[in-house]
Every structure is written in C-alpha cells, then in structure tokens.
Length: 471
Image 1 (cartoon, helix red, strand yellow):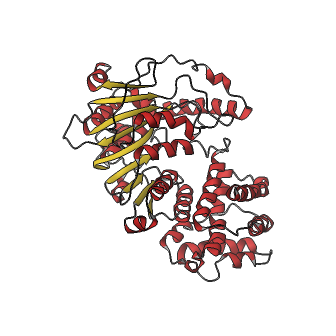
Image 2: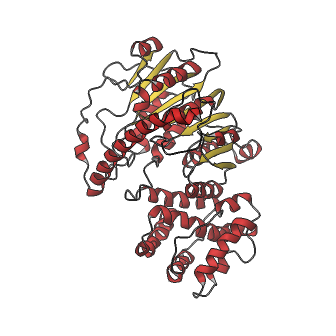
C-alpha cells in the first residue's frame, strides 16, 4: 500500500504544471529526470553521478536561477555521468518547466515524501505506477498502445521466460513486457541461480522520450537491458541477437510518412506496420524460439500481402494458439485485437499442423475505465493453454458451444488462410453503446477517426511504396 500512496503523492504534483499546458505523458518524462536524482540518493547509486549534479545540489539551490541551474545540470548528466545508461537517460534533455517557482514546488514536493522503508526493488514498482497513471490520460493519447498489465502478465505466464534466455520486445514502449518477464523469472528461481545465469533483455524504441522512460524503468527494476534507440523495421534491428523469446504489442497503423528504408530482409514489403513487425518477430527467433504478440484483427484476414505473411508464418513457425481479446482493453476503443502464440519451427517448412483458437471476446463485457481487465479474466484461457510454453500440452476441443477449439491446417487452407475465426454467437456485438462516461464516449469517437486515418495512411503508403523500392 505504501507504493500506491507514494505514487499518488507524486502524481498530485502534476497539478502544479497544468497551468503551463503540460500533458501527463510529458510530466512522467520530466519526472524521469527528477525521480532518478532522488532515488539515486536513496538507494546508493548517487556515486555514479558527477559531483555538483545530484539531488542535494538541486534541492539546496536558491529559487533565483533555479531553472537555469537545472537545465545545465541535466546537460552535464547527459555528457559526464559514469554509467552509459545514465548518460542515455539524460541524453538531449528538454525540460517542460518554464518558471523557477513551478520547478521549486515539484522538487520540494518530492523531497517531502517519506521514502523510508523502501527497498530497491520497490522503486521500480513506484515508477511503473506513474507510467500506468499516464496511460489513463485519454486526452494526450499516451495510453493508446499501453498494454494492460493483466494481459502482459498472462502472456508472460503462458510463455514462461527462464534463466539465461535472450528476451526481446521490438516495440518496447516503457518496458512493461521486459519487466514482467524478469519478475516471473525471479519468482521461479533463487537469487543465486538468477545471478549465475541472468536473462539478457533487448528492446527497440523509436520515440526518444519513451525510450528514456524505458531506460529508467528497466534500470530501477534491475534489468540487464539494452534498449536500442531506433526502428526495428529498419537496419537498426541488426543490433538485435536471435531471440529465445519475443513479447510485443507493436504499434498500430502504417509506416506512411517515414523516409527511412524498410529492411531488405523482410520477405513481404507493405506499408502495414503490423505485418512488417510480425515478419521481424518470427524471423528474429532462434530455431525453437517462441513468441507472443498482440495484433489487430486485420492481420488475421487481410488479403494480398497479409495472406502471404500468414502463410509464411505458418510455414516457418508452429502457430499453435490464437487468443481473441475482448474489446475496449486499449484506449483506442474501436481496435479489436488478438494474441498470436507461436514458435520457430525446426523443419524447413509446414511447421503448423493445427491451430487452437480461444474466444475471449464473444459475450464478454466492454472493458474500460469502469470495467477493468483483471488477471482472473485470463484464468480459463491459461488453463486451456496448458503448462507448455511451446503449445504442446494436451488440450481438449470444447466444440461449438465452448470457447476453445482446434482447426487443422487443411481447414485453415480451406478458408483461404483467413484466421479470423469465430463460432460463438456474440451477444455483446452492440455493446459499443454501453460506454458510460463522456471520456469513454469521446475516446470511442476518437478511435473511429484514428481507424479511418490509419486506412488513409495505408492507402497512401501503398501508392508511394513502388517509388521507395525503386530508389
């Protein structure tokens, strides 16, 4: 409970910045700078910071000229800290503060919080709590791709990350998948075993401030993590090693507008980001490596290149499970999503012989602020999935009235390799009207506009793609 109280106290300080028009997402990014200084003082990592650029120096500076001192301090930390990670956290810093008084109020507010009795691992929990609060700000769009913690935890429990593995997220965001994987591993092993054979984490994040938040999050949670600043759909991916496990929720939309060349090693070029990310993921696995990836419905039924990518996936990998997710779990309320669970095959081809589908969407509530998604909503799926992370557990087809069914590769082929399979009558088809708050209604309207824009971007991307390839 102490964690939640501290999160709330830190979060309440954001009201100071509202007059300056600061969004919650910007606020969390700014807190990355300030909290790191305070936590470094609390947990003994202050020795890694240059003298004169520590929390006590900021706290003790007079009000006059405080903002200028703070800006110089941030720049110094980005160039002179001993730790490469700390330099990366403070690289190219920009502050959202515009008045000495506001900065003083936030610094004093953090200083007044009782940080006693907090062990090192709890600092990471506090920071994650702030990130989760940021995701709830529908006006800023910060939570558009925030993966609900219950879904992250379920994917991790199914995939069972373990000691010594290379674990990746090519669209790392704030690092939630990597941290959840690490907590699972630590809960399953002794501290000595973990230290003798630690897992190695790699992520890629394209947005500078989000990467900064990810670096802070993984650092505070004690992960051995490399977070590449770049785009996994370009040659930046060359820095990644073949993975034992990939967990990801790639961004929705198209790559229209980007002038960087798509990687040449992806077999099927297309403006659709999800199809490109899916190819990156299954090609980035070691033989026998496994993945769980969140993807929108269109990836399951798109014709043309979409169909070719699905066929390639089923040929190269054992696509063993598709989980149809409920609606409303992302703040882009109109986006319907799934989790694909697969492992890289050991045969040259024809690695998928059958696929199991679990329908967690039909006749389910519309999740959102008033109906949160919880761990318990995944308990029956995880029981049906079984204990084998490669999908080899003994399973039972529940028939046309159940949520869990198996379809052979031939049955899938007979459907023209369309994986958008549903068999239950969905009594919640009209539940979009069940959104209750003005915020949720506004979010739903915004999501439909965003979906329309995504379609337009996709068409534009298709039109300009030949020109990009011929360059």
